Length: 326
Image 1 (cartoon, rainbow, N blue to C red):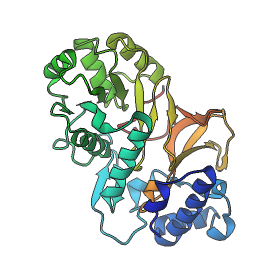
Image 2: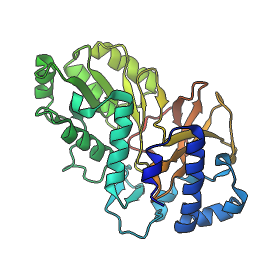
Image 3: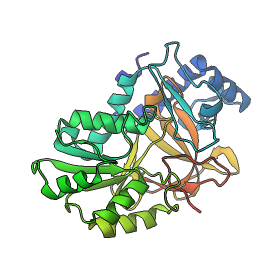
Image 4: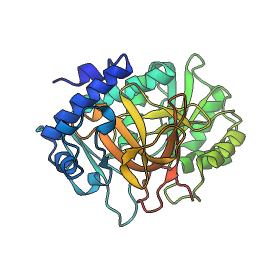
């Protein structure tokens, strides 16, 4: 089955549920590691008739196993940033065009066409970090924007401040995206960007500054940049889709991505809205790896379907592109 023709054209919740069950059955057949895990927890296709019964593979398996649901050779293997001495997650992507379709359609759903933007990135560039899925995404946005001033400015912050002040392409919107520490550094040196600019953080202090909860980080950035809201991108190496927050830390996912909350004491038990627990993610764009992943972040679902990311379990490894909670 050609899943990409289905997942990017979902119309209703029932469509999502049917697609998720089809992807689950496919991955049970094609993904040896996921099949072994499903068997171990007693969630085989014969016992799964509803989306809520699908098992979620712990994200740590991406560090220790080859998680793939295809026979094709990977076109690209993305690696998590990790920390010194820690194992890095590996996401084998057999078809990068699926990732490009997911990241472009996901962005346009929440922000409109990327061609309407000048994109300024405060992150390493692809030469310095060729294995990062985040850098791949930002580089695709920069390229697709078609703007001559879109680019990576981590090592060119004085020029970035000048471009933002001049607003050289007034008909374009401004997107300034960066790692948390880089945005803080830039805001200290060059406060007050154009008020209409979108400031988007992707997490990641990377040992450069003290960790902050998201509310504290956003309060500092809002004050220094002179803007009301700080936007956020929520993604990770093991996913091909992203969720976005336009302010106040509430994330929304595209139609082919769904977040559920599991009981911290019973990973097979799902919790209702407003209850805090571990985050489970369904990313149907991951049909050639694993679409059902139990991540190490803590969160909750809101009544409107949005979700909050509240921190991480204290026993989990540090992930370079996430915020921590002390």
